Length: 89
Image (cartoon, rainbow, N blue to C red; front, side, top):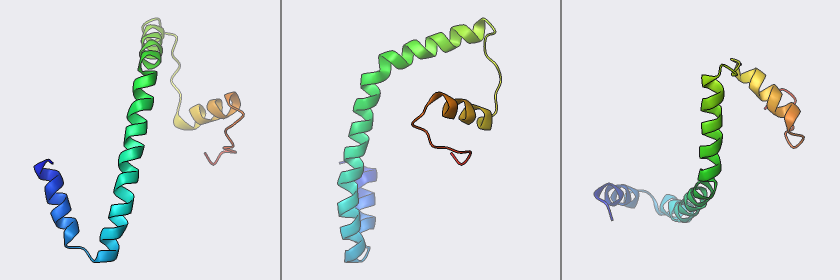
C-alpha cells in the first residue's frame, strides 16, 4: 500500500461508522469501474491512434474547420440517432 493511500484510510477511519461503510461500498465499485475503463481504453488504443493520425494529417492539409462546442454537439446529434440532445445535451 502506498503512503498516500494509507493516509487516506487513516483519515477515513476517523469518520463515523456509517460514512466508513459508505466508503467501503463505494471504493470497490470505483476500482472496478477504473479497471473496466483501462481495459476499454487499451482495447481501443490502436483505433484511437489511427484516428489521431488521420486528424493530424487533415489538420496539416488544412481540412479542419473551426467549430464551437454547440456546433459540434449539433453535428454529433445529427449524425447519431441514439443521441437525444434536443439542444440540452
